[in-house]
Length: 479
Ligand SMILES: Cc1ncc(COP(=O)(O)O)c(C=O)c1O
Image (cartoon, rainbow, N blue to C red; front, top):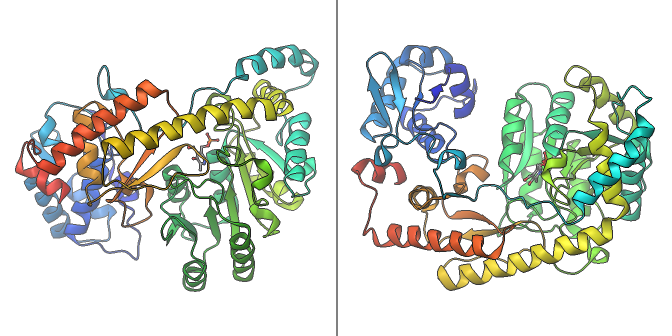
């Protein structure tokens, strides 16, 4: 037993809102996906039918039939005294099977696209320790960030072709924290946020948890297709647009300069504020910095840009930032007061040191990632014939297109091989994703080779059905 999920929480997870009246199949389907990708781990107790009926805009019969369907599919068991409990029938007794931490010894967690610290991060910590005493006579509360860091970040934007001064920067506890703050500050509950689909799953979650509604614009062939964006801007009038133009997660695509200009103009016309996530921007793996298009905000003056040290240097630094107009920074600071009072000084100093040696640190980091990307591409080509992908010009993962709609099935089969992946649908806003799998390459060769070996084994089983999921329920689960 891993705990219980309340009716209100389940409603949020199911993404049901007041104007959405899902049928019982729809509810069962949404629960099925939550179970598959681990958001409802095996062992979780669902709310009673009565409580869920109260929380959802549907009848008791709909909930009863949805639970019955899940029971029939082997995803739910009813236990006296503990209500309806999520179970993965093929893996009785496992708890949170799809979560790397629970996957058992020897399991490879392949759900996170992040690397070990870039070379030079340790040295930056030592240098920051030497710089720290100069700050100790101050209070340590700096809502917008340590001035030296704000200046260094502003200088980097200016260098990239977007003139910026330090007062346009606010340091945060990472890019996701910045996104949550922007969503809470600018949008009113129920407003829409345009998102690429696929996109970064934590961003979808952050938008939803802020009470906003993500609206999908599909990336066709991993590209930004302007008419689709214009149509959604017209039809949905979103308040914000969350975009990842620089080595998009998960596709790795890079938006070209002309599309930035055209999309920026469309967003400005529609009065939709772009929130541009540049977390991956420094992970240039082909060409060099000079070949990069200008920052998106150069094409959309109202854009709010968010950045992070997490991928360029190390996730453990836990520092990100916002670049926006002075007025916007002031507004964000106002909202921030109620949540937190600034970011740690020491880690900001670490980032100051890293930015001072940026070119040298990134050169080594990029070289390692480039090698790992090419190794993974070769492994997938050799071991998984029929899988397609475009070698991304930057970022941290390959976005593989599978020969069939088997992503969730495969994720479950891979978990049985001790390989924990994120199912394609998690990256999509609404429907989609069963043909895709994200394969992060930020790992050493042996790890990549072992991961692909396990993946190929799992895929073979799915294809041949020589070792089909052990109950009929699993077929239903992945149909
Ligand atoms: C697009 C994108 N934004 C944000 C993040 C997380 O950033 P942070 O660690 O600064 O919150 C990630 C991490 O994978 C990401 O891919």
